[in-house]
Image (cartoon, rainbow, N blue to C red; front, side, top):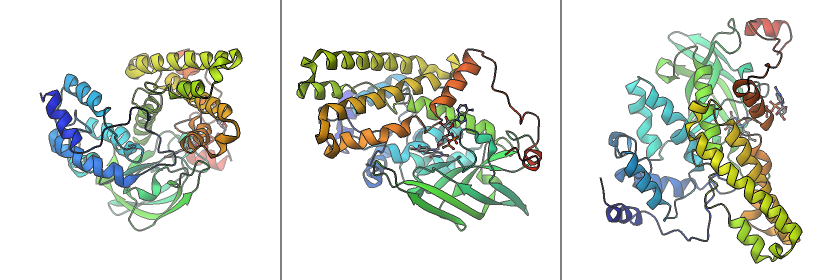
Length: 389
Ligand SMILES: Cc1cc2nc3c(=O)[nH]c(=O)nc-3n(C[C@H](O)[C@H](O)[C@H](O)COP(=O)(O)OP(=O)(O)OC[C@H]3O[C@@H](n4cnc5c(N)ncnc54)[C@H](O)[C@@H]3O)c2cc1C
């Protein structure tokens, strides 16, 4: 195992020291600097510093738990760029590849994910398939031993700069809607892929809708198995919720109490009404942090990250609102604070809405009666014929 000095020396060769006053963005909000992230990952992959637990052949350093913890701790001393543009590859696709017995796919994609050369996006949502994700209509037509994929995806974050898209599509419409779906890796730079940017109110321009017109895919592009797309999607969404909920670092509440200092600097904490509001939020943030920690074992608790996501989303939104309120009119021109405030509303939608997280908790954890489902046991093509989708 490397010493603290060795790791610190490797890190300082790649990154400037972090200004302790700044809290780095982890959401890409108005700040998805792909070049900075790529430069860091390229250098980091030579020493295995970004993904230390990964095998060295894929850009890691085969680090054990203790070394991973040490590297994470030392990394926080440095100004690591926002990893948001790379998050789908690093946090969602890589675990699927590691779990898969398909070594060819590991060789094909893991190195490019670790060194930042190949960015991934997630193409699940469609105009009629958001909360009801199993309603995917993107169709797949066999063509010899390959397939042609056609349809429309929407809300695709990172689309314009992605090389690969994790795309959920319907390979067998005669099955009930959760079955007959397959997850493909689609080459976003290939023929038939049209990416149109959607601008968000926080300034982000990486959001997009993607039109797929006879996009050719083959068997080596299947993530998981043919017809096994729903299982892959559920695994990805569990990782995503956990990541947004903090256990993966997405909205990690640690170090996130800068808002309290801001309120103090603005003199608000002298006022008992403001103090009461601040204290209530402080308590919520503490609880959110503990929930995130408990949920680091999300699969064991069975919640799949829903509870952690709900709590952290609430804290994120209240934290950005309280600062805006305290700033008053100045808040309208307040740079990062304003961007965070304008990102707030999207937090309760991305990765599954608050209502859907509550449904998951109600049904899977509390064992409450499930919602009525008129589509149960009916094949996707019959649903369409009956006008139910
Ligand atoms: C910033 C951002 C980034 C995103 N990035 C991606 C991405 O990269 N890839 C991707 O595939 N998708 C992405 N999404 C899409 C996101 O997953 C969907 O927006 C979300 O799942 C909700 O789907 P919808 O927008 O179609 O809303 P709908 O499903 O139409 O929901 C509309 C409203 O009805 C409520 N509702 C729906 N069903 C129920 C129910 N059964 N019970 C109670 N209430 C219900 C919802 O909670 C919501 O309030 C992103 C969204 C945002 C905002």
